Length: 364
Image (cartoon, rainbow, N blue to C red; front, side, top):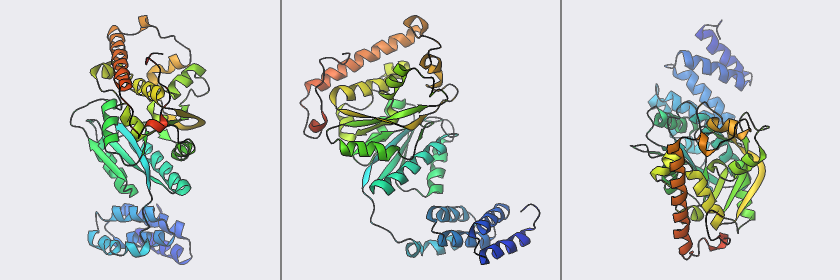
């Protein structure tokens, strides 16, 4: 459009429209609205063409953008949206994806897009849907605003955002997300990682086929080192991190969720403690397909462990800060106590079908 005046561009877009070249017309209308958003006609024509093409989400996104400059005209279209896209019976909810987020404004939209693609695949394959629950753990950037903008632009309704007033750590953020979740299954994804479109379908199907299992885990793609990570570290990660986990909500509730004590915030390991509790009390399914991308970003938990995962360095107690070692040992004590408290309880009927035979100790 750089060589065309706005009037010429609009005339050319109308020509494309008349010649049944909607993609070319829409592209020009998009350029025009970027230059003169106060003109209603290109917005109107762009929505019209997208509606004819059946591209509901793109069409609604256009209306959402246009509403800033043309609220009354947009309301006229909104009054007849039911005629264009009649409401269907809502799909049953399989569960929710819980996303803890802290200072994640720059990369969270890509993560949410990957979840949405997986939800659309779930809807198409299993005729079930899922919710997304984002927990902003007192971020100091624009995380909450970015999340609101993403949901508005995508027109996604099955969505909740919780905002903590003080930072409480990833375990507490995940637990808050579970409490706000919908459905019987819970998935977790960190704010800088990504799902493959098949992830929700694969894990939900695995539990459909194994009604005696309390959780399922997929394989993981380790960003940048997937062909170099040592086998024992791959296994340890794939059986302990939460991002590849699909757990029945009753099982997650039974073990008390993720630990939130200070020792875990200092030393980490709340995810390992939760994973070990699940493994000790419930049967699980491990899938081979690698449908979660564990992203490496400068300074994140994965980045800090790359040399260990690839065998370039060996981690020993002597190489770790003393305070970290003490916090980790305190975490082991707290996890063992929780195990014993749970083991003393008589399991209720809701979890009994998924239970294995727990050992005498969490450390065995």
